[in-house]
Amino acid sequence: MKEELIALKSELAELLERVNDLVELNDLRAKFLGKKGKLTAILRRMGELPQEERPFLGQLANKIKEEIEFAIEEKNEKIKERIKKDRLEKEKIDVTVPTKVILGHRHPLSIVLNDIIDFFYGLGYEVVEGPEVEWDYYNFEALNIPKDHPARDLQDTFYITDEILLRTHTSPVQIRTMERNKPPIKVIVPGRVFRSDAVDATHSPVFHQVEGLVIGEDITMADLKGTLTAFAKAIFGEERRTRFRPSFFPFTEPSAEMDISCISCNGKGCRLCSYTGWIEILGCGMVHPNVIKNGGYDPEKFSGFAFGMGLERIALLKYNIDDMRLLFENDLRFLSQF
Image (cartoon, rainbow, N blue to C red; front, side):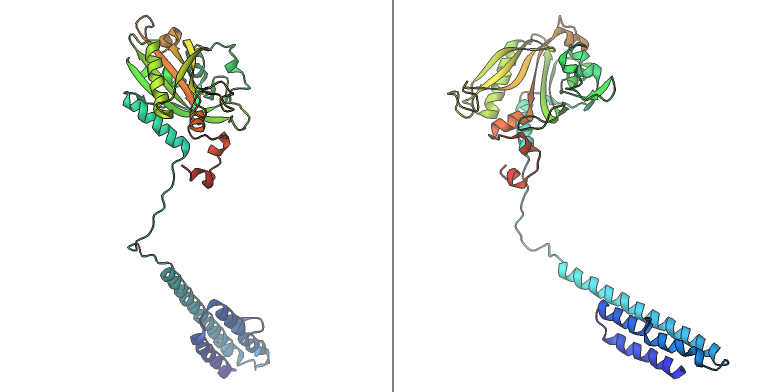
């Protein structure tokens, strides 16, 4: 039995030299150490030996078993290292080889927002931001929106507590900006807003607005109209005509909605403009004296104008997109067009 154990060790060493992959090694492990393996078969005959020979041969068998296990494990590590090295060599990339670099595309909302920011930068406006989780005071009260105004309806606003909510517009930043700065003020405020709307082609519970605020001395409605008319021409083309219709917003007085001549029919009338020749793009007006007062200014000395637009609406019109949901689905077939 002693000779068999020594021969078994020699046989394993010879076979290990010819093993090249883990499958072969696992087969070899089972051949020698498995339940029906050669070493197991030898150990089962230990009971046939004379009593005085068993301790010596038992120790020798355990030693041979440990050496076999060590040799197999050592071979296992060598094979794994070789496989890893081969894979790394195969996957090696020569960064000096010239290649075609495929650049990504800006999202249409990012393109339009950058265009808007560039325009107002040129007029001396500053870009400011504010919190998306807002106090009721800034979102409503300071903007001259009384407690019983429909905009406070729970069906329209996501309330977190009675006094904290997800902002429904970017207008709260008007008050925050006035509180932190002395006039004159010229800012635009891009950001996400939240309203309890069902998702469809023209509505979403999460969308983007761009707010504008100008405060100073002797600011008039003519300043508002001149600024926004220039804005419309810069974004939609020099041929675009504008008009201002009376409207109502609690935080401006007088208030207006601004239309542009239809980008599809140029004012002749089509389905896009409901055959009116005009498309509404934003709301605006002179800042209400109460809002100026809430911002910490004297409404007898300072006046101003404000405007707000939906970024998605501007993008839909600019690129003739008929479904707002396309802007949020991240379909590369759609985004690659920009």
